[in-house]
Length: 169
Length: 340
Image 1: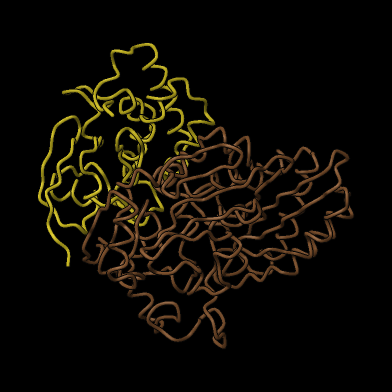
Image 2: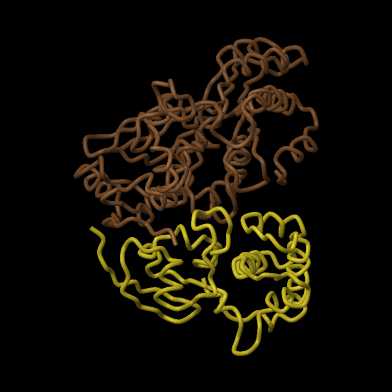
């Protein structure tokens, strides 16, 4: 039935190679084989957005992606967007403005917001809401999340040098 | 954690290889494009194929080609469809239907072909294996009874695709390829009103492209009912396309409802009422009433069924008023809860 295959791809800018089963999702491989547990498993059915990561720069749900289909792709997870000890401006803003409360939805939201700001640095509030409309949050009421993304966008416009890793596509 | 059942994965690079491999054992092989419908179903053991054929590596399945007509590869993502200026300018209704599917993440993954082949949905079916076991399963999978209406001879699961009603209204056709040959099928003939055998596609066929005829002179619109401004499948929808003369008199009309049966449901009576008329309030009301008559929502989705049926009138009325030129932006925003 299922068989092991050698998955070779780029994770957070570094080459990764791992022997995995063909029925594993990308979420399972990231968390269980690569120990990148920053990506959360929520509903596992595409109904919450907690497992969102970037594949070739685009937000996708890792719980509904077959790992085998990630071959040769560039994957960015929450672990890959800071630089050394320095947080990404989005992480800073979420911490400063209460954009993260319990934090479970935060990795998926920050990566989704990063993809938006990489493409649309001056995104409007409506564009932010639309981009994040696939990420559920049970704590914040969303207002602080939108404010956090707006603040990060402002920082990133003022200090382009802060736009660090994870932009490879 | 809900794990996928074990399966053999194969990744063809061409349509030719895909259909050859599919022909080896069509009934226990499934095709996966975006995976956003199949993988949740497999996790819940609604489908347990022995072999899964991944279509992502087939370059010839993607792309939008616009000449007089519009030809869309079945593997084109919904995001690519929404970002296409050709789609938006030529068939606004198709753009509106695709833009309201699920969420941005799911549109980045899901494809137009996948949305057309979307499994029918039901509150007694879209549940975990344990949940379904607890009720003795249902007719659609592993059981014999339809729990929506226990005397029903057929499965009443709901057609929940947003693009199919609209493509039907646009007069679109699809291309189905198998190892035995290729055939073109009108979207109108792609579906059965049966929650189990909802597609007329054979198990050995691959849906490769969608063709929309020249829309010169036509205008289209799509109105969707759902609880939230994202995520949710439709629980009612109106897809309408009209061709009108210079005086605004309707020459041809197509009125198709979504999510009120096991297939996209046309209303020939509503179409007949519209043809030859200008869109007065009375004509719109009569067409909405005719559409209301064919809607047969069952008690197996979100929201209460009598209200869903009543909302068909509202959706058709709103759609026709918008095509007439009324400013419906505020009404649309209140229903769609999404900038469209």
